[in-house]
Image (cartoon, rainbow, N blue to C red; front, side, top):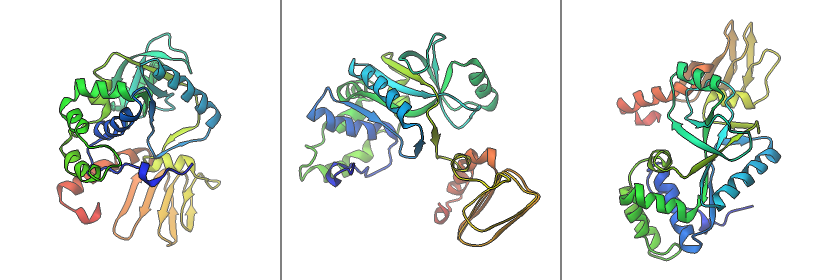
Length: 284
């Protein structure tokens, strides 16, 4: 369904997920403190919606009881670009289980150990809780930001937008994982069976979603491949010829050309940081 424009909150500054979630929770809390809210990243693709709906109902029911509930995605490989959720040894797929710990993005060797253990699932950033519960946790663990949010005028009033523009940039720049999830014991999770989840946050992920030719190449432009396989090619209308190369990402835009190994496409962020340090804002 379409969301009415007046129900859409726009952040006046980028302050990470804790203030953004807190802002939404504070408004919902003022209307119905016991309402269960869900947090969903906007760049995910889910193909098995029937299984996913069952998982959502399970997490929702856990949140109704007052818990913070998270979904863990079964890892398909030893990914270093995601955080991980550790479940207990007796955790059952699709059932509510205790969360033992949250782990930050690991190195390759650690990620391999996580996957081999069978107890670690990808943290997909999908959370469920009552509005009251998340605000209570923010007031306890992030009091400065919580006080700023609590001081905002009523949502929908003429005073709200200018007050938000002034107040929100003062909130702490921190993720909900650091601010709340790693500090509270009232967290349960659902280790999910396969439900067709894909985080379209890298060129590798996009490659997995798009149709391929007989050699496994994905192209969003005219492609002339020879002895080349497993490549992802994006270009603004020009012909791209490949000769004797495999498993590359080639992205050609008017001002930047990116060529990378497909299995290292998560590391593009390192190049972005270098451009930021060089103050190449025109390329960002």
